[in-house]
Image (cartoon, rainbow, N blue to C red; front, side, top):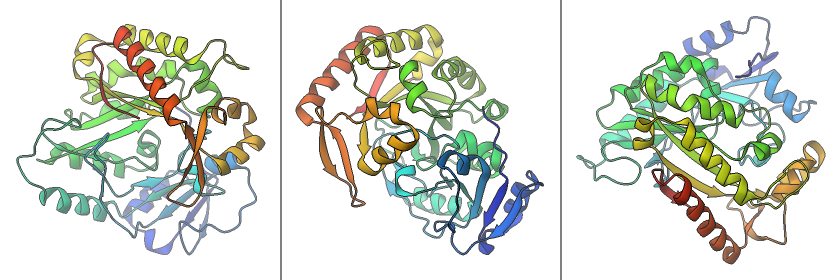
Length: 350
């Protein structure tokens, strides 16, 4: 996994606590700069990817809201962090900011107290559903990659311990990184890690600065043996014919990916594994930005002849596969998956 070593730490005064001190002590050579708001950074003349490498922001999360999910989890926890070291060409977190360095929230105890209050107010025993047969599940990494955050802040290990010990709650998060330091923690199946997978040739174009798909596949058994639930996340599914840098079409590549997954994982892992499938939604602002920093990715992501406009709830223009075409794509995906990895249940697909 790439080493994160920021050159500058931006902080809000209300974020300075014992947890912040532990974080800053890891980066003694980083300069410190006070800011007013963690989500409104001063003007920084720095390229997109360099900001992700060189800047760390420490903030206090003000709005501690638990949101309903119903897909990969029952609920979405208040964010523990925002932003990521990676620079995936389709990332919905990045598209709302000109620069989006990693922001770590240091009021973790308040965040966990919010989750505890929320889950204890839910009916119990819980009615089993597709997210879990027993526990209420909380996605703890919707706006960041927890595998990266784990090494920046020891608070993440405390978060894992919270869910491990909780009688009603279970954590889940998706990741594109393999952090083997996490193998030292045994969550006793109370933390579910969902490795994001796509055909390797496409990942090399669009999953900028993340661990390779091959590395993610190789890690699955190890994380299960360490005590994690391990599922997979086929997201985003990008539809393409042969283009520059990709030798085959998407159907051939996904068939090979499913075959690789089938060969990689142990029988015990297969028994507990489900997947979720999300077809690509792209964004006009992100498309224009990518034309400057990653134009080759746009040959895969921006295909107006296959896509239709969807107005974003944030006011932007999103583009997704036209609904009639997408229905056929979904059927094709399900058929290939059923042929190659029938043991892998689909939690949801859209």
